[in-house]
Amino acid sequence: MAGTRESEIKAASASASSEPPTRVMMGVNESTIRGYPHASISSKGAFEWTLNKIIRNNFSGFKLLFLHVQVPDEDGFDEVDSIYASPEDFRRLKRRDRIRGHDLLEYFVKRCHEIGVACEAWIKRGDPKEVICHEVTRVQPDLLVVGSRGLGPFQRVFVGTVSEFCAKHAECPVVTIKRSAEETPQDPVDD
Picture 1 (cartoon, rainbow, N blue to C red):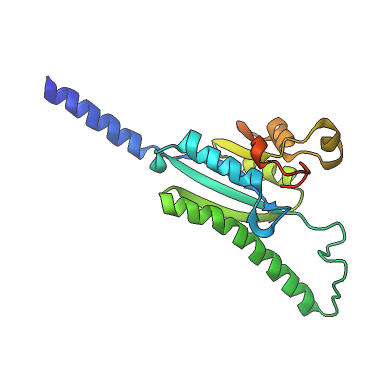
Picture 2: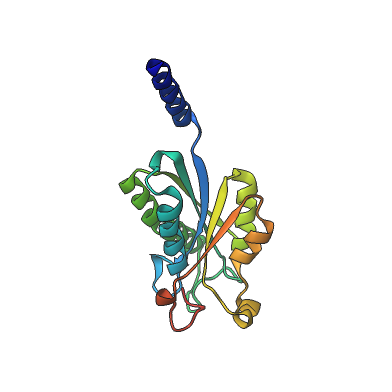
């Protein structure tokens, strides 16, 4: 009888390990205070919360999917005083943006590898809220985690919130993680 129970436990354990990992997508962005390649307070907070509250010690049971959306300026130029005189200038600009995005994602990927959590990371361009929802539809994660700056109603009107849009439109469960009060800068729009 004891051998049968032991066999059942081993079979259940083997079955659990053959299950695909839970895929958690995270929208991450750069710091508005420190700039590239530093991750925003909200992104770091959401990442740490995910590690501590969802993954815990079940590193093999999860796969984190990091998406960084680069927002092109309205006119396509990042710096007002830049002069672009040749096609090579624009190629350099595109390469710089790619490098900056990779540097940002490196923080999250490095940390995942240090603790043994499987991960993927990629960059898209466009309006963050729309791109994140589009990527959720394309990738079909089990869960989307986004950070929130915790803006008041007046600031939300002018700044808009990616987290609210994703909570309403993403085709998967969404967890929004607000910044802690100690981490909130003097101007809450900063991150």
